[in-house]
Image 1: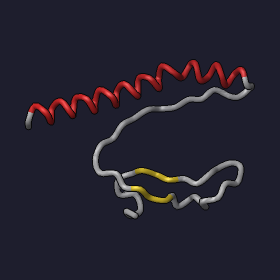
Image 2: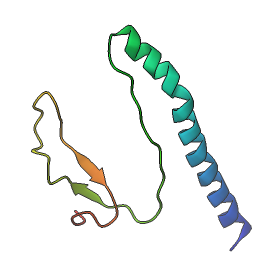
Image 3: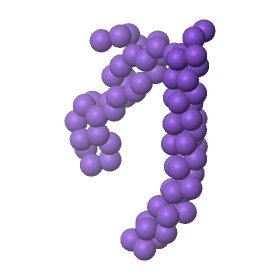
Image 4: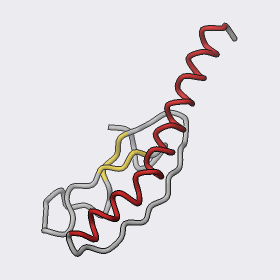
Length: 83
């Protein structure tokens, strides 16, 4: 593996972890804003994955907004089939 490849991988991983840590750090700020609006707290988990990405339509989505859900696109390896 060349030094360029190693540096690119390092840069990518640094950005991935930085993004996740930023999302964790912002949770209290987001929840403060939600509380001000009388809305419930937001809880979330953060994870990463690697590999080939395929775009697929969700089997549960109608593609129309009904006020509770909007069109759902899932990004997941091997989910349904590649478009």
